[in-house]
Length: 407
Image 1 (cartoon, helix red, strand yellow):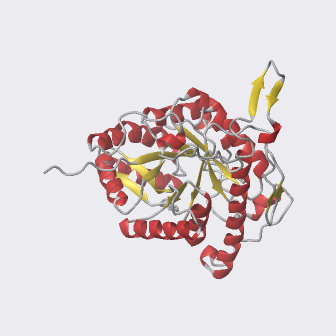
Image 2 (image 1 turned 135 degrees about the vertical axis):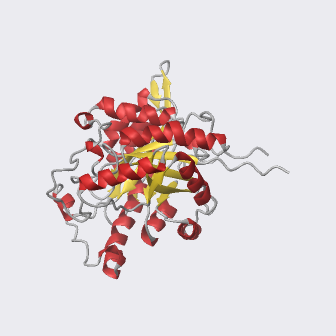
């Protein structure tokens, strides 16, 4: 009796400059002089699409990159400076046909009205392949760039302390309000609000544009949007989550949550927490993907991957440590790990190439064929939208009048 076929995985890749290792830019394969060019980002995203990946995320922030998560640093031996993720996404989207494009957006100091318009535009530019990764900004120096509010310093002991959890909780609650306002703005035009009837001279039906009237603790949004409803209805919302507060944000507001478990027990616990929060939020019937995040050093020879990691650590001056587990090994070993973690309830993975010029092609040209041989990944793109690739239905517009069912 043959064993059942594995459930296909969803795969995404997280793009950040020359790669996620801070010394990645010093590798011979890196292109440090091109990091701020459109051609560089186009090459990365088209390579990801070559591997049939579901989507790419593009990192961003409101302060310079830093080796200290709480404040700027004075290092000059690491990449500093980046392009705007939403604008990069809009540039590369027309050069691709299938892969989802998911820029990072910071909710803390930006406006939901502007962001809803930008992501709706990206959805039009990409013909329905847009998403966003929402994050918060907790550094006082980032708040100082805007001058409209202050953010208190991260409490001593970090966010695991009661004071830290309270501070983080306020930022996450604001982010949840932000996403809700954005989602309402996407729905503020009904799908058939644009009539475009030259004979009658009517371009829009004003009755099908709606005020959203959102009121939260930090902002009020009247609406409607000035951009018609996006092709997907609702572009895909995602967020990175490391603990109970972020899990709650994912459960309340997102279509995808990224978690960082180091083994199957941690993965199972994270999925269980998110599912419990999802039920508490009244979303038990919604499809909510939970992806595992891993940083990867990938080579056909495991010794080569280890040596490369050691060389980069030496250049950086210390062993790499980050929020996500680090995988160092072969495509077959990584495929084994992904399938093992999938058994704990993860539906996909967002992989972070340690060196973009090396590890991204290793993922698309080595890992993907290995998963395909196992029947664990698609052989071709099966949908034209990001929601379609993720098995998410196009949602009904919350403001549209319900059509009565025929008797």
